Length: 66
Image 1: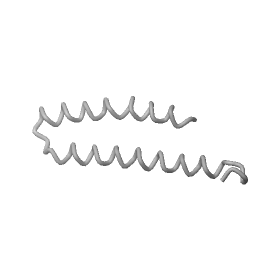
Image 2 (image 1 turned 180 degrees about the horizontal axis):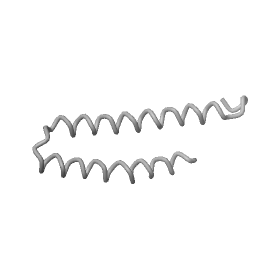
Image 3 (image 1 turned 30 degrees about the horizontal axis):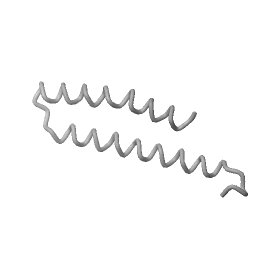
């Protein structure tokens, strides 16, 4: 899988989840820290995923390309 495909999938799956969470939390009286924690978790997950794929890409390069 390419990084651009993974980025599009993360946006396509992450944004609707965050919008749904914002709508539900504002309507049902859930504390604002739940939304903040969820957003932080999503952002950290994306950063971690991109870091792992970047390390994998560098490791898969031929030895003379490092």
